[in-house]
View: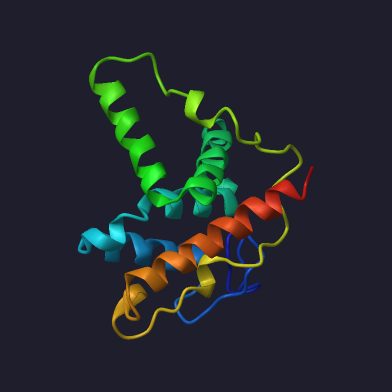
Length: 160
């Protein structure tokens, strides 16, 4: 369920924060990262985690790949996720046959029966004070995105 004035809760189970429900935080993050190339480096894990925490806003056919990408991010780090994205872009430019799933084959598939009812870290948990989401620095922002990604994977894996 998407946040409403009656519930002030969103699909991931989080209550509304100063900016509203998670979608409000998500849109604010997307807008802020457009003007900050260092912040934009975390775009892929932001999108994957948000959609996995709010699958009603996602295309179901992509959730498994997004779940596996988050696992790769947590396992090998942001640079590995960025290399995978660059590999996919290069493959697409050369007319490759769709998404290359081989780099993600070692990771667990998205468990059935979701979405999880709650996550220990959500987008609503991001501090959004003066100076935006990176007011205490890009490394701190990255750690918060990693915590949201870890909570997302953890909650989905608990469904097994």
